[in-house]
Length: 96
Length: 96
Image (cartoon, rainbow over the protein chains, first blue to last red):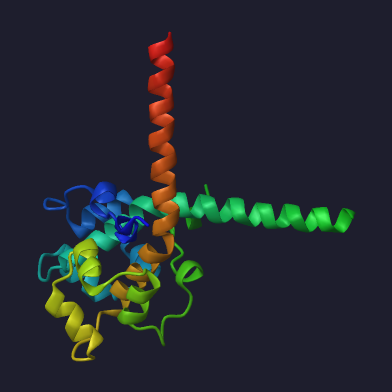
């Protein structure tokens, strides 16, 4: 079969991140620092040091983060649809 | 509006990762080491050191990675549908 299927194409989702900071990504997600740290289980001090430029998030982590933020709405909608579907099926079973 | 919407719920997608290694995640994705490094732009030496237990991937990166792997099929299918839709619309325009 098509071996290329196994690749996960991050770039086509996130684009070029050279000029994008962690803070940009957080703002894109509409999150406060606290929300961000809670969601991603990132220590507050670590986020702070990235945003102040004291440390840098690794490039691969930044790409993963950008991908998760860009696709999270899609994933959340899918989960909601799936839950509705399961509820619908359960209703159907009750009627039989 | 509902402020909780802004949280991205990683846990409900990836579950508990305490016992899950980077190698487990790579195998789950059906990727060779080379494919994995290419997809995620992770240096081969870095992956090797994680898999040999010489170093550890940070917990938050592992969670992001697990989320990306778990949701990538959904995202890829969505992209494919979107491309088909765009093609369909272009065909429609041609007919007018």
